[in-house]
Image (cartoon, rainbow, N blue to C red; front, side):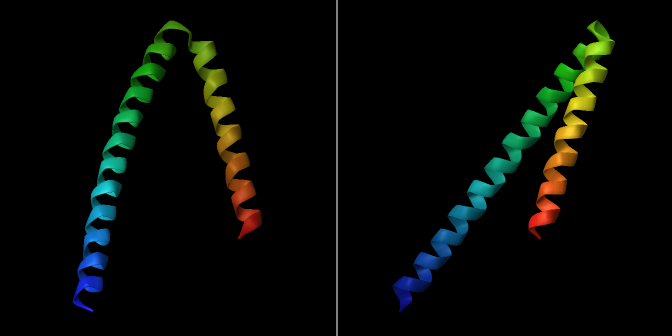
Length: 70
């Protein structure tokens, strides 16, 4: 029985470590995306606006699909 408890704790710690790493990577991706969008807005404002509209449409579509599943 003791072994199973240790296994569960080890798995929990491993998952916690992996989730923290994923969160760190996502924050880094967010920073990079913001840099790209700022540069794009500076160089091609109309292109940036179209991109923002496309992303909003995709996000809304995803959210709508998610709500219909619930």
